[in-house]
Image (tube, rainbow, N blue to C red; front, top):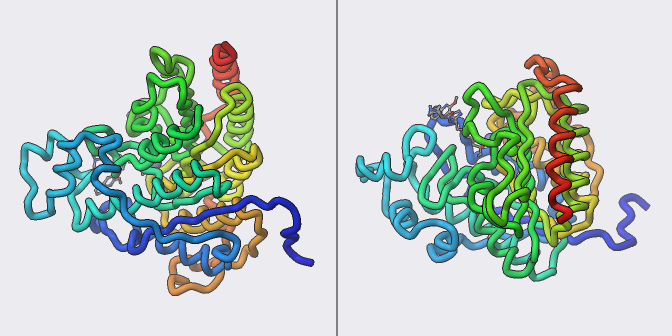
Length: 377
Ligand code: TV7
Ligand code: CA
Ligand code: ZN
């Protein structure tokens, strides 16, 4: 029989907020919520919804946003509109080109955050093994400030929810940008370990995430950063990822894992400069799933939107343990996927020269293994 479902297959829950793909940051802005509609279409087109429990989550409430964010900041977010932008608040809360005030911005934030929170609650209650929210993962949001396309940090809010039930939570971030907002929120905590893989150097945003940032106070050694250079390839990235994450999970022994799957680490991304294939990105997800811990899977960056949708649809198949054909299903958005209409499009391997050498990656690996030895206590 095809697709053996006999023994202990994990339960997967999928959260897609109604209308989340219909918001617009502005025509020239690289963040396109429409990629979420595209992703959801591929997920449905492949029939993956039949392998999961699908939810249309409610939006987060103001109180839920204030679990992490300053009241004044949330008040500002909830009242400002494109036509009522007060100049002072503009600089105070860091609203500028990266974080424009667009129509429905507050509802957009409540929508993706509601989904991450519902997913976290489901995991905490032990009634699902894996929960997916591709609209979440906005890792730059700060307590009282917007940053890097992110206004509300749904990840921090979801982790705070998990911490009510779980002694230790591991956060992993494979977006090409440093997960600074999440790192900062838990920098002093020994209950949340944050690990980010990212491009570092030459003023690449947000310019944090050096190897030397390892946490402070009680949180010292509970933060890891893996700074990488342009053009990293599948073998270099996946090799380092597995080796670092295996040891981290073994030593930190988390009760649950939150995985931010930013797809701007793929080759050919509009803002990125790595060379990862969808298969390699998905292999990182498969590896984390293999530990069998409660897992919250979130989206994040990703700016070549046809590839973002391919990547997250593929990762949904990985998480549900389903083999899907390389030929994309037909959707109302077929034009987006021309000319190949294949899932595993070649993402211009070698477009960006690989500045990472075997030796440079090995040096990072050794440094991190040294750092992880402090965790044993
Ligand atoms: C999680 N890179 C978010 C990643 C956030 C990256 C940046 C842009 C950008 C913004 C635009 C735009 C852009 C072509 C690209 C120092 C600056 C330079 C604004 C123009 N085109 C995530 C944030 C990063 C906005 N910001 O991790 C409107 O690129 O580098 C910067 C800061 C100052 C502000 N300017 C860019 O993936 C979701 N922004 C076009 C229009
Ligand atoms: Ca990252
Ligand atoms: Zn990013």
